[in-house]
Image (cartoon, rainbow, N blue to C red; front, side, top):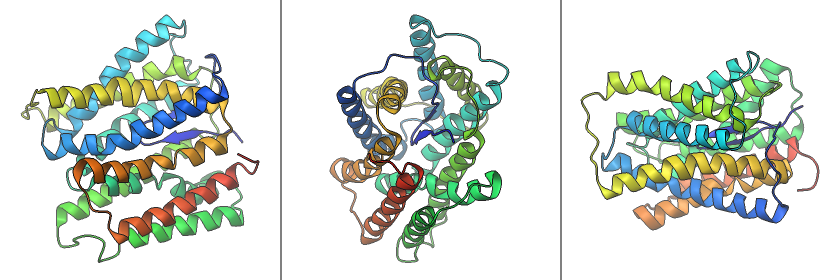
Length: 318
């Protein structure tokens, strides 16, 4: 079975790579940098939404548009810019539509109502939902370790959605938390779709087109939903956009390509569990969010479940 390294914020990386392999030491450093960038991005995105600097779907649009331009330039310089094959186009479109377009837009929208730390935890439930889908759709065998990871993860979700976990009387809070779980579920659907696809193009050659699809998908949404909403241009707004476009998306995409080629899959999977942890800690430091017992218990249960799932998918030593 082909393995995929998946993450938050943004990109499913394919196993067929043509870029140079970095050293293991460099890959470990890059993995640590990505964890810090993606984890600390949760309070940054929350600031943009809480202060209404930019509309949620406009934010996602600008982010993928900037990344598309950068990835076209990088792929061209690297000699990897080519039109995707007919075989790759369906998945290029699904990644652009679901993961880069819909996922980013909905996460930004939900961040208006959900704390950054809690959002970071909920979106990392994606691998949990893959377990039953893979069994039902792909006919994969679910091992006891996978069942254990799935049940731990579900227990974590139940803990986070217990009546004492947040204000159930507030419809916006319910909507925001529900959307966060939905985005994780939606990403799981995409993982099932891409799981057995045999890629013909390299990640670097396909990335520009995936970002272009996301840009084209979000453009009519912005025109329809947020046409009358202005962007509050300021130094803070520009910092948020530059951090999210070139850094948290384009750079991290390249970095994760390098990491997944140089390190074992289990090491990458377990290492990426640091993202929600950094997200929670940075939300406390930057936004002054309080780590509730509910969120802490949910993080421990969901994290434990993801560890079991990572070990079940990759039984070798990390």
